[in-house]
Length: 94
Image (cartoon, rainbow, N blue to C red):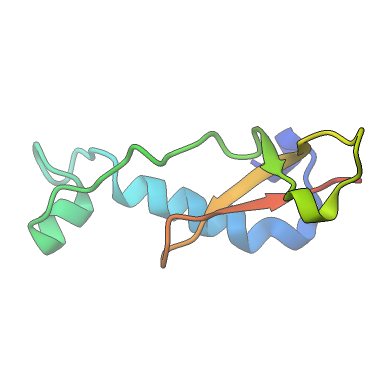
């Protein structure tokens, strides 16, 4: 995933965590009709927050940190989702 999307190697841990997170919430041949997380906990996983790894995202800039003619958002790259709060971790390549 990192080499295809040309992301710095410092984000390899996030890529591994994200791929494991998705694999644990996807159907497999080993466990029939349920995901591994559902087989383990008995609760169906919520996957509406899934995003494509290293897709383009926009970060809202608060009014206190921008000037009159600045844009309302910054273009960033989406990396992973936090386990604690479903917050997205973004990377600004600039």
